[in-house]
Image 1: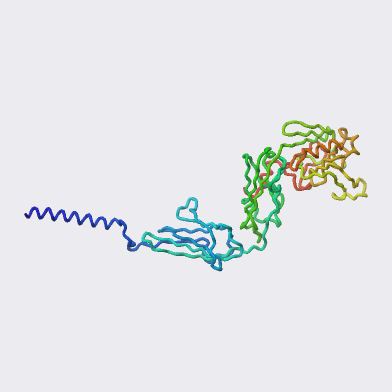
Image 2: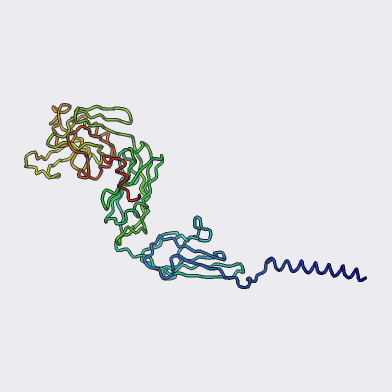
Length: 394
């Protein structure tokens, strides 16, 4: 009997040891381990932050627990709709994003609640105020949304005010194309930036510019007023080559030569600029006036003339147009004030063929290279490596 009692006692010890092991393993205990810290919540922006960009990410970092709830309200206590998502590469941080962007010059309160392993809550709040800009800027953009342009038309962005932080602005200008192509921005002035590929655009592609400038600090008190998206199509490849030495204008549709016109370019006194010109507009009838480029109408060489079928190729007064008065010189010598003179029939054909963004390459003129002095589209006259150096993003 003493032996049996010993066996029973030993069994009891084993049973008691098993129960003790379950308790120590934490199998569902609701009590926090003595000395364990509650969940910690850190918010960004910090409480009291001022001049916050309305697009600054609202971040909630939780240590020792899990995020349970996030709310954002304005100064009147009205809730702001939004949602949270894990921050890329940081599982301990959530980012709250508003359904619509936060406003400028407005106070908001961000509140987050986290729970620890014992289901006890920790709450943190941060009240911050978004920046009140001295100036809001919405740039003009060309080409216009929904248009079709030729292969030489760059994207042009014109800001109302000089941009002090060009890198910030440029980093929020995103270009996408239906067919992959290269491209770079170039700041032609402090308020004007253009984008073009290394070669002319491929024909038939779709191009989109997302100018995501709302909430972007452009420097010196200027902030982006809103986002804009512009999409356009690139049409057929129309590149014409004007040879001022042979007095011939060859017109190509794609790789096919479709016309070879005798023409007259700028005279020795008024030479046509060399380099790739871009068609910007066309006029069935227009009055050309030398005073528009500084030469009085009644001065020697001055003029005021009604012209047909005028296709503008630069802002310095260069057009491809009908010039019946110079037909005897077309194909023989250069006698114009810088324009490309054609017969009326030939100019009429080119007028119907040309579209904004088409290219007219002038070569072998005794004139200088197309440059900033000739208007706003001289982009293709700038060598590619030099063009890329004009970007603010190095």
